[in-house]
Length: 176
Image (cartoon, rainbow, N blue to C red; front, side, top):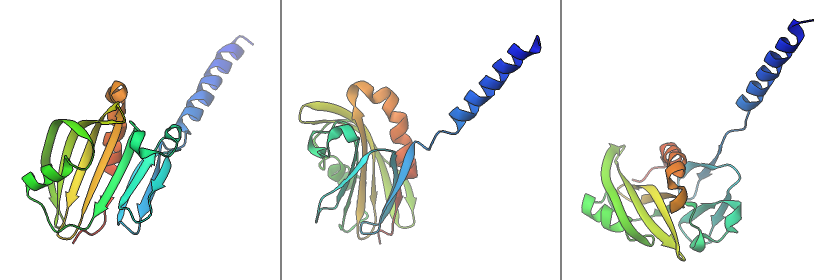
């Protein structure tokens, strides 16, 4: 009977480990047939689309479905604009689509299937609430996707990892 407490501790540890490994995925997947993209977003977030608008917002449920005041959000904007854009045109476009007040990087990093990919890191504000973000601007011959993942500035250090995962999962449809 001496081995019973030790065995019980090992058994409970194995059960706890199995339960931790059985967590549901942290992300859900969204595909827009209309705007031709797919992206991962945090499970439990709301999807907010506006009729006749090319923007799809993903917001924590605590944001109450109001993207204009959110400091934590995921945005995908799709627009029919001839391209691909030069690096200067892409930078100008990318920095004028949201209330951005700081830029720590904007660079071209990939060309793939007729699309040019730019990655950027910016800060901005939504009704006085500061946020930091990473994003993508993917331009093709007939359209572009603008993807921004933002977190409140005071939570950016931890939030950037999640945003990086989201951007890695972004898949544009044909832009030509």
